[in-house]
Image 1 (cartoon, helix red, strand yellow):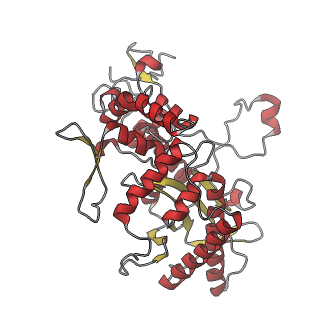
Image 2 (cartoon, rainbow, N blue to C red):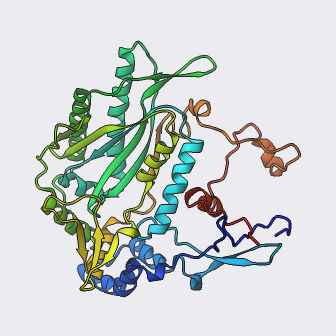
Image 3 (cartoon, rainbow, N blue to C red):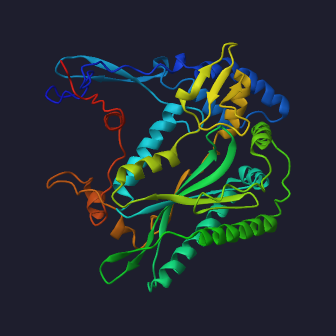
Length: 429
């Protein structure tokens, strides 16, 4: 590194040295370390053992943030001080740190480089228990159900635009797929961030037409349409009634669904009518009351972080007097319980059920948000072109000169400065 750059600062703006997080001192790490072998043995007895992606996620979590498993050395060219940054596991299921980092990076990318400054509304769709189990067994089927939901939602947006005299409008969405609830229950559902309006293409520009908020009747009709089409799709595929589990992960998922049934009660119990723009029909739930103003970019980033978050939050773990692991829930259960109580092996069973399937996108882009959409270049912010004289990669770079320049995702130092206000690249010596 050049001495004038001071790229490896080890002091923070407040004068405190950067310190590595100690994952090996947390309750979650100890639980995984002490019970992973027992989980593997139990899964082998159930048949076929743990799926490879689940076992890999647990194993990599035990190496995440531990210097003995690899690190990068960041040093300052002026004062010669340095720090060690441990490698991360980049897991999507167990590791709270990697999930939180991914959520922050994804939210920053969406707000700064994807989502234009217009009003947004979040549409959240969840399913009855008999449908959840079918969707958990087949990630491809879950994608088709998402397509059914968004086609019905986009059709509603276009109809509402036509009532205002606007024809040819196009809309879009960013959808976060979550497999968990705030109480670590297994519940696949969708969080779709949808603009509260449509775009109308003109000769050389695109005009945004604002739509009024949806009415309660429109939300109820939409959930009825989605219910009919989803059940028709599942019946046509022959997946209802669902078959039993095929491996250990599915066995843990069945157990998690059964545990949740004890608290949730039957699927026919409707939510309170005082919640506007919330409809419930035979276990299908649709919520559309979360709205953000066009200027509320901080709120939009928080909403995207919420959609991209992981299942676990380390600050909710507590150790009971008898050594049990307690997990504080976001809200009390109907029976008044505020904490979930686990043994180490029981916690790992629950976490194994929540690991998302491999090679499946948890963030998806639809409509004019899609990469091949015709209107996308008019709406998505572009990065600045390189300065004059800067290398563009030879002939390949010149051949791509007409393409939009893409900016890199937020790096580790930028993430630290953005989230915890720590400038790790500023030398205080």
